[in-house]
Length: 134
Image 1 (tube, one colour):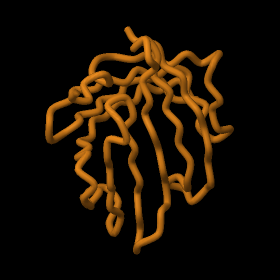
Image 2 (tube, helix red, strand yellow):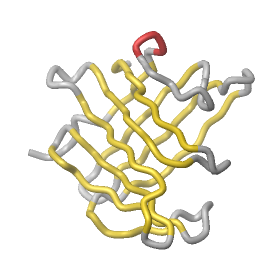
Image 3 (cartoon, rainbow, N blue to C red):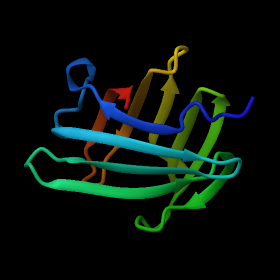
Image 4 (tube, helix red, strand yellow):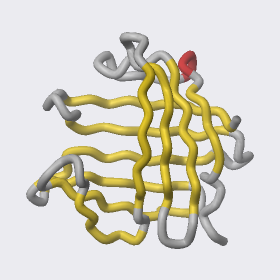
C-alpha cells in the first residue's frame, strides 16, 4: 500500500489544537502532494500578528539526510512509519533539534501534526495541530 493517504488539503482546527505559546498562528492550511520519492508540503496561513505567510518544502521520505537550504548545517531525515504516518527529524551536528509527525486518522478525515524541538529563535516548543480534510 502506497502512503498517499496524506495527499490533499488540510485546514487547522484551532479549537482542537494545542499550539505552543510562541506559535499562535490565526489560520493554517497544509497541502500535500505525494509521489514515491517526494512529499511536497505547501502551507498558507495567517500568523499571530495577522500577516499572511506561505511556503513550500520538499520532504524525501527515504530515511536519508537532506540539507535544509535555508538553515546551514541542518539536515532533515524523513520516513514513512506506516502508510498513514510520516515522521521527520531535523539534525544539527548529529543532534536532533526538531521532530515531527503527520498522522492521518483511520477514516482519512483528520490529520494530527505533532512537533517538538527548538525553533529558529532558539526557543523550545511543543505543539499538536489537528487539521480537517478540506
